Length: 128
Image (cartoon, rainbow, N blue to C red):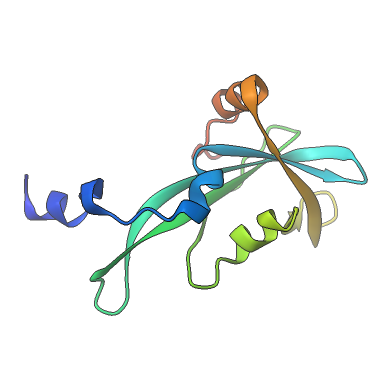
């Protein structure tokens, strides 16, 4: 194992239990009860300041609209955890492609076989 592999070896990385709900998760985004799209989330590792010695986790999120368009991945990390806090509060703020305005969507976690189906269909990380 080379030095770069050791640098990002996840074996000894601290695991933040607050992020467990975001590991390979799907969230339904709605306005007034009408589905507008989904948000997929995953958790990865990051080295942070000072000097990139601190090990921590980060959350990646991606919006998927009903028309099939996928937004680019966005990262969220502590100590602020803006997207994490929004989702835990039951909403997610992003630009609505129909209005071109920043919008707060109601967000609820999808579970079970529906989550599995959507995770496969939405292809977290794909852009288009």
